[in-house]
Length: 265
Image (cartoon, rainbow, N blue to C red; front, side, top):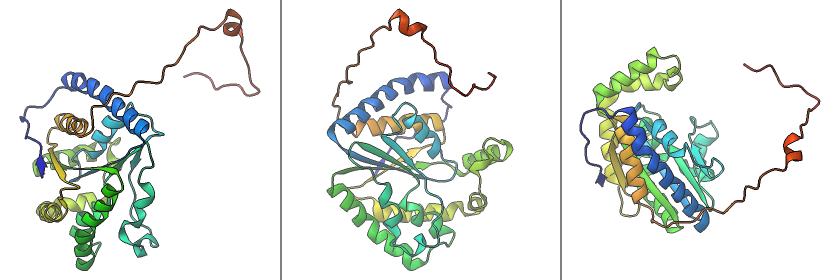
């Protein structure tokens, strides 16, 4: 499987990060135009340990893209009815249509990670998943879907630091759940489950790419650069738009509706 070269431990500064990210945002918009123009369907899976930075890199990718075209899929725990379905069934409705990109903030690989480690599935269900996942993904790829799978890696010491930051920051407290806190006691078990998952589901048609996210800014840039390198460098021109000047009378026109706006802040 492709493993991105481990970057230096020095933390990347915000100014350097933003300077490197800006041209990548332009390239991401180019990719989005290509996907829409060609009617392609793209699925990008983001997996990794708790606090690795999945949400941050997804936000960096989607920041300047059209939300009508690019969808983030972050499902909550399955309902009682969904638990009785074929396991992959709840994910299928979220697959993209032509011209769309779907980014999965965790995916069907929940079964290979948290469900396996925390005992939310049986051993038989876990074994069946590892057998069916490559087949399911082969069906997606054979149908023309571009499938990219990323696993974000973070050391235990860095993970503990980020857990503490979330505990101490009321604006990040929502990111913590009882399951997240329990996972701290199962770092090695999660590592073994990850390795078993990679061994079973790293295939030629749907390979995994591991990215070091101990420095989240470097990790985002590394992942986005890899993503951009995986799609064709095809330039699709923007649809030309005219922006004629308004006439003087139009500029003077005003309209006051039946409801007054609230007082400005």
